[in-house]
Image (cartoon, rainbow, N blue to C red; front, side, top):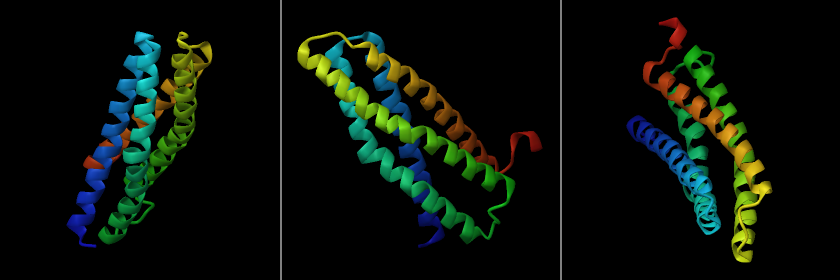
Length: 158
C-alpha cells in the first residue's frame, strides 16, 4: 500500500475512533444525566451500534496501519514516541473492552426498564460510573497518543 494512502487511512481511522468515542460518550452521558428511561434506552442502543459499526473497525485499523507506517518509515519500535504510543494504545483498548461489555449490559438494563415503564435502576448507575472512569482513562490515553503522533517526542523531552 502506498505510504500516503496508508497514512490517510491511519489518520481517518484515528478520527473515526476518537470522534465516535467522544460523540457516543457525550450522547450516553447526557441521556443518563437526564434520567429519562426511554432516552437512556435509545442512547445505549445507539452507542452499542456505533461501537460495532465505527469504533471496532477503526480500533482494528489503528494498530495495523500504525505498525505498517512505522515499518515503512524505518523507525524502530523501541523509539520512545512509538513505544509510548503502543503502550498507551494497549491501555486505551484495555479500558475500552470492558466498556463494550458494560454498554451492552447497560443497554439491556435500560431497555428492560423502559419496557416496564420503570426508572433507570441502580444496577445501570453502578455500570455507568465504572463506564465513566474507564472512558476518561481511555480518553486521556488517546489525547497523549495524539500528542505523540503530532510531535513525535515525549512532552518531558522538549
